[in-house]
Amino acid sequence: MAIRDLAIAYDGSPAARSALKYAVRMAQKYDAELTGLHVSCPAKIQKDFERWISSDVLEHIQDSAKQKAIDVEKEFREKITELGFSGKVAWEVLTGNAGVALARRGRFYDILITGQFARAIRREQGVLQPEELIHSIGKPLIIVPENYEPREFKETAAIAWDGSRSASRALSDAMQILETKKKLDVLVVEGKKSSEDPYAPLSATDIVAHLKKHGVDAKEIRIAPGRQSAARAVLDYCGTTDPDLLVMGAFGRGKLGAMLFGSMTTGVLAEMNVPVLVSH
Image 1 (cartoon, rainbow, N blue to C red):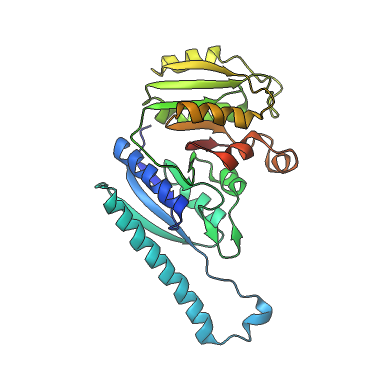
Image 2 (cartoon, rainbow, N blue to C red):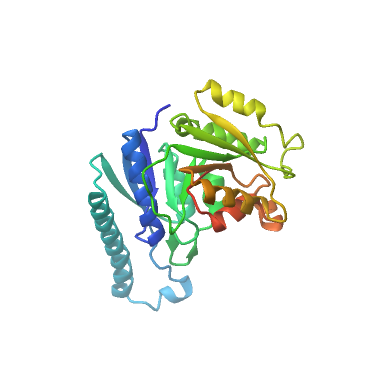
């Protein structure tokens, strides 16, 4: 299925601006529509104090949130014009919990793009965590590093592969992008065992053969991490080769396991140096 509509979570932050540049390049390449999603979260007043606040003050708080959304939309459209995007553009303001709102709305687009967590999407009462969105959306999510400077696509990509269920799901979700790339590196970190699949790691030979049937020029790359974490080893490789996109499965252990033991997903998202497509 071809990519026809992209959504980008936009709040006017530096991370969101970098993500917008990347989103525009994707939209131009695939001739896709681009929709900006903004989550408006007015400051919440505790019930105990609400009766002491005048209706004028409460109305001012609501009006401020609405004006902020208007200002962010204006900036969004100005940036779109500056970037020279001539395709169809839309804008939606969502309300409520940021993670829930974006996950629900993001299901109606081919891909949701956001800036790097946690600075990309802010709430007045806290910062959106990646697990909240990745676990709920049920769609591919592309996260762009906060300081990333988008450039013309080299048409190369990489995938972190261990043969696990989440890696396989990410590969399938990214296939519509990977089929347009000239080169794909299948990264296998030596000595890394999957925490979710007793049969992994599996040889990358068969997945390379599978990709070639789809016209993807895939090559297995084995990485010896030494004393580094698997996440650091993968990012070091990407720092050298600079692919357009790194594809990886997300939070194979589940939310609780990731919090207790950490995960490769957490390591990559914390120090990412290239855009990452994650899928759960």
